[in-house]
Length: 289
Figure 1 (cartoon, rainbow, N blue to C red):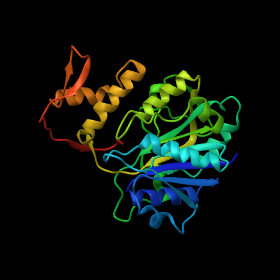
Figure 2: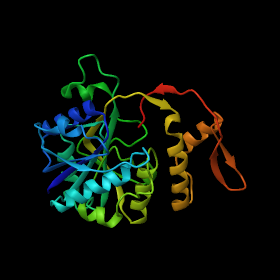
Figure 3: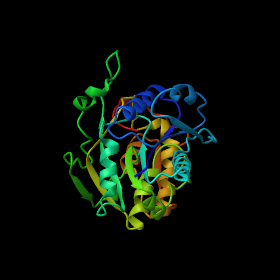
Figure 4: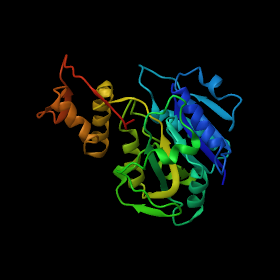
């Protein structure tokens, strides 16, 4: 099964370097490594001369908002054009475990899981020491995120709640990609596009399968909680989602914004709206994003 790893990127060059090293150290190297550059001309210098060989696909950015949905779709289009049969998506912050691609391939070949979104575990790493992360140590630094199923290595678990789908690490066959369709490109910036994709999969009759033994390790970076810096994106994308699916996603963040006086509920319009000139301090935490 010819495998393509697809990673959208804009900055985070150190994180991308460790991801590439993790792929090179894996038990099953990919036939394609497609890195989608969202207006990042420096990616060539980061990736060139290292294994696995990366192909860079350009994805222009408009209005300063990262087009993650479009970037993933462009990456897939390139991978399929060059014969990919299994599409593996990794967030730029995620380092694959040694057997991640091997396990995704094994499960994808099983007819019982062929028409599924295959989701491995993701562990959020603490900040690295001054020498950086070592690939051999990653599995000892953090446990899988507690809000997602974590089957034992070699096991799988059927998922019943598509709202748990996230795009940090997942895989699907080319046939399943065609059945679901691409990511909705109405979403721009932070939040919502992967929750939308989970609902598209549910509507297409595509299941979730949680895959044990396919770990990814999310490298630390500072974030705000709630993500006030992404307020505009989250409110806009939440409304797009509500229009498409009839309910509001990201309720925890929306409620936190409302508690801080950043947004308010417009009862007559039945929508969230931003409060003009509102401001708030953010608390730095991890994980997130």
